[in-house]
Image (cartoon, rainbow, N blue to C red; front, side):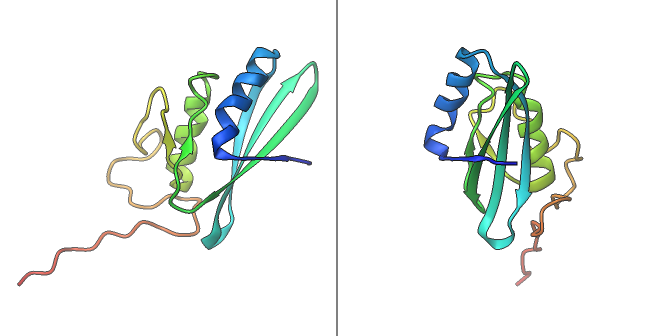
Length: 123
């Protein structure tokens, strides 16, 4: 699968361009690259013509949400947050990491690195 590189700054404009041209958003895919971050792949289709775009995101950096353009993106963006710990800015309905996971879950199951919680030292 070939994927054209995109930047976070151009992501929402690309989504709007695809929407205006009649493309459907099929889904997003996320790949954990280890300490360097994540690849988020955006998959669009029009008349059985598939276009893929790759956004490489450093670990800890937020991604602009495209849910303002493609409303259904809110589901997969929330899922990526639950499963990989990647946060999206401007999402139209943010479940805060609890779309699938309970509040007390402290790890993202598909993320190679987990969030840790430490107890304050008693002094």
